[in-house]
Length: 362
Image (cartoon, rainbow, N blue to C red; front, side, top):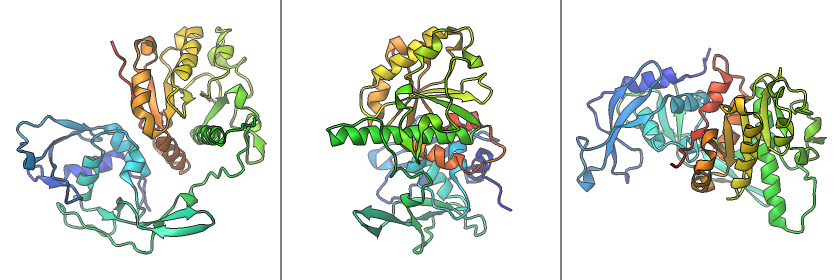
């Protein structure tokens, strides 16, 4: 019977590789090489060095880099036997050692390189297109360590169509004369629903911004969903902070434990570069509940505006909040992985592997 992979498994696979060998990337055009310096068992981190000999670089001068335990846990949770996984999809724009992790795993005995087809929907038609690079875990067919082998899977197609949450019937609670506004609002609501569903799978309940209560998903208003908190006024975690519920009323999503005693995350969804308003709402909430300042404050935003989010969230006025970043692609993957009912992994620890810390400017 298959048991879900863990960070310990991935660290062990890489630890079994020859530390004296120099490893090449799967793309022959990539001149950079990798050397394993150390694997800290049982679950990382893994220390590596990288250099490009074609540029005259050497490993002696290269700075050590880290493949963190968080990375190993996050990837391990996404893996299952004979199922193609796209590393960039798992990590989004996060972690500059993600390609090194992919490369080292491909040199182990249980991971293969593959290019599954992908379905692309254009109007009413669906076509199979050439797929992107994936890795595939095949424990039943080990190969020789130290080499990269491509596995032919011509009959396999990876598609967005098999994602479980559908948004075709998502209705918004206001009208707009601009199509672009409608699409921005719809995407915002999609991410909001994913956060609600992911939280529910982790045994949590969500507060949703009051101005979004009337959005309809799957024939039901968000406020009517079992996974959504009806009001925050009587929540145990906020008792003694009489102004906190009002301060948090327009925050996009706040996660509570079902008993209402703990707040694992406060999340603001930003679809453009207008991040400051969300940060300000979260800061006002923190001010009204100062003893809860160590809660996890998160900006959720598209992968393509990550740098803008970091720049604005790193401003000194938000220093007390220890802000985290969660990309849209990470939200989607978090939702999909949370549906597997993975056993033996702490839910909040699992969730934190999807977050990036933002360093505050002095």
